[in-house]
Length: 210
Length: 181
Image 1: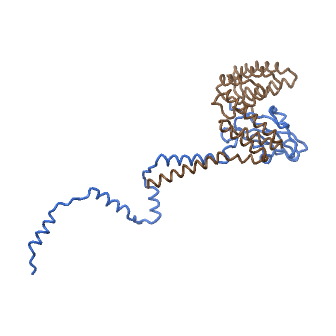
Image 2: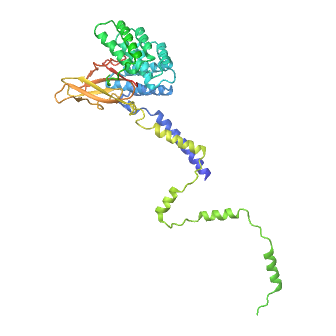
Image 3: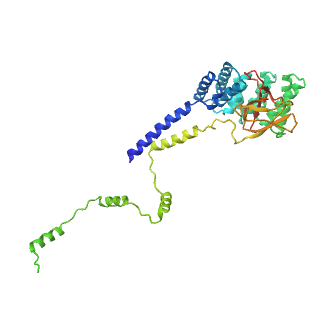
């Protein structure tokens, strides 16, 4: 009887290991939307990211975006590869405890031109999630705010500001820029205003809108 | 009458008086034989099944078997097809997406939250003749890229949202960021 159970256990372990290995090597079924040239390259990039303990979902989504937009194989592969590199740099800057959404936001910030040191400093000064501060930093740079100004502004607010405060700060900057203010000046003015509001605790929950 | 043979009687008595050595494992062997006997089914199959199900027993498991069971459990969890789906239902907030497309016949919302699948989130007209299209989605904290696909061919960014700067595919996209506080 003991021998029987021992053999059964060994068989189960072996079968599970084989099945688990096969499952791990099986490419994401969503990648079947890619063409036959792009699919194996993207699958390999995804596997490499998984082996490096990086989030793979952003890579899959970037590849699917390219497929839906009918981008060429070269563009899709370049986009996925670039994002994988950015995710690696993001983790190096934020540390191993960063969540996948934080890494995704940090990768976008790095791609926008934010220095890695800024990301590391953000991690140090803010206990809460870094998703919104990093996204605001990226969006400000996309709006034309110089990277140094945007980084200094976000760092000055990140320690105490809530996510909603930071989103409102970004909206204020974008509004002033749209009205003709130079991006750096708009940022400085919005930082002063936001800092007053954060310190006074004048916070208001806004309805969900991008 | 029968006269007993004294010698025979003497032999029998001597045999009976001899001390008998009983095997020390006798009890165990007898109980084992009893346990192998088929159990009585006085209450029928249902009662026997219920008794079998409810009777407490000690399960002995070798470390190897425990490892095997744990490995099977992990394999089942890992092989779930929805494991990689991005937006989880926990901690999600509803977001409204709005776009004005007066001459559009169909508008789809596509992005990181729905695998960029144009069939997944068709937008609805705000009214029968309205040119405003809307969609509401639950999103967990994160940064999502998205765009509107008009009539299946034209890409449109959200004018009310930040533009995606890292757009390598030559068509406009927007970004929505969902925070937690």
